[in-house]
Image (cartoon, rainbow, N blue to C red; front, side, top):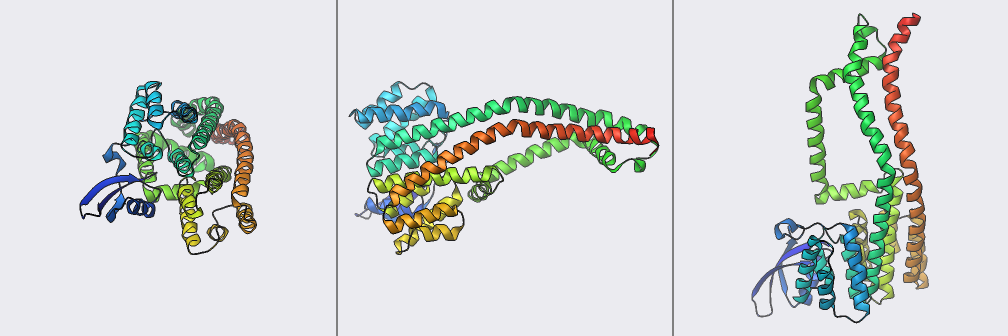
Length: 397
């Protein structure tokens, strides 16, 4: 959840400055009004300047925190005491420092989600959005358990992908070294066997040009590639870059439908849980918008919330955007008419998650053979380019 810096006036006319966490600027304005403050200026805060993201904690160390906190709260332990216990039992020093800051902020009057949102490198935006929904809907313990399940699933998937990629990555590294060695050292030898490069096959001439490039400017190519990747990473962290990347993620072959279904499934589950807890639909949409983890979908949901305020249905703006799957939109439209939206949303979330996890498992199994085929194709192309002129010369073609 992003932070906003604000300047406002109190009822007495005193000028007040500070920061707060909110899903968007409109929500930040509403929060200030609820605190009887009259906004003068509200703008996105620089998290790095505030030092909120200085500490990084791995998700596998954070996942138990959600479950421990849920168990303590269910047992009737007060929030501050629960946070103190978790801080004292922190498995890593960085986690202990983060929990100390969370405890301090909660003691100062911040909600749990607001305190956690100050540490996005420990508690991701999806987690804080769900926890915020639980806090406002009166089902905080359930939301904490839900976040723990999401975190465990993500860690399990990451472990599967890493395990499946180890062998192909080793082959790719070795294959890349071998292929580059052939291009740099073996390819020029082929050229010496012939009088003119013009007499060589097209594939071989292209390989010779690549060899000349790597031998003459290999270091510069490497530096330029590294600089380009770094610039791309920096751009992807900007608002425009994140929006563009999130839009591309849902359109990629194979990976796009998986990314889209996961985001839509999270949105449906959070929105359904909020509505079931009695939270008004406009407030629920404002909260659920941040749970998608996708800027494009978040913008669509925020626009849908504005339309609902004007008396329109939820399904229409989702359908008009073209960003949500058509079958999901139709189910939402029918659910609105039958007045059982929260039930249908939970069913949609369950269905999307089951089908998506099956696709992910299948894709993980396909990664290794696909990479092996790609590597084999590279080696085969170099081999053909090297052997083709020799075969033509020996056969007299």
